[in-house]
Image (cartoon, rainbow, N blue to C red; front, top):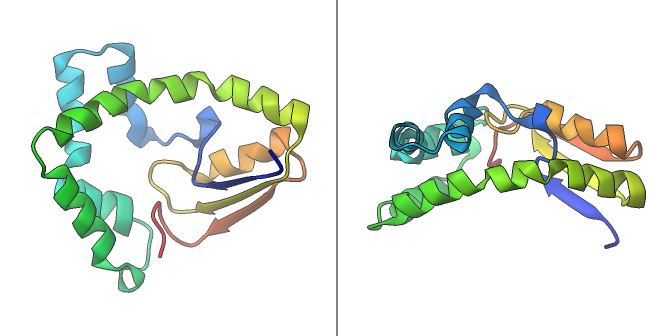
Length: 148
């Protein structure tokens, strides 16, 4: 590996916003009730407003991305697949300490480009890279998760 470029790609617990609460509850207790509590994050409104428009200049966001994502989510069974992936995301979080150990040992160059208004992966996650990679280049852009 010669370098890492991270676009809102979290590797630190402090990068997870409070919005992760229902997902974290599902990880701890994978009950039907907790699974259903995560389903709202798959709604057309959540996809459009939370993933694409939150924190972004709406005049710069093409509807193509969220319209396509909404159409994909409307296919039969895709919601259940996504809920399975939400449950499995805990395996990424469990690897955060391994990622951090790699950063400390190998010191790869890192560029983090982050939406400073991202409702899911908050700026603290981008800035945390500097703890293990003091030379990390971090750019907090005035936008949300999927920036134009």
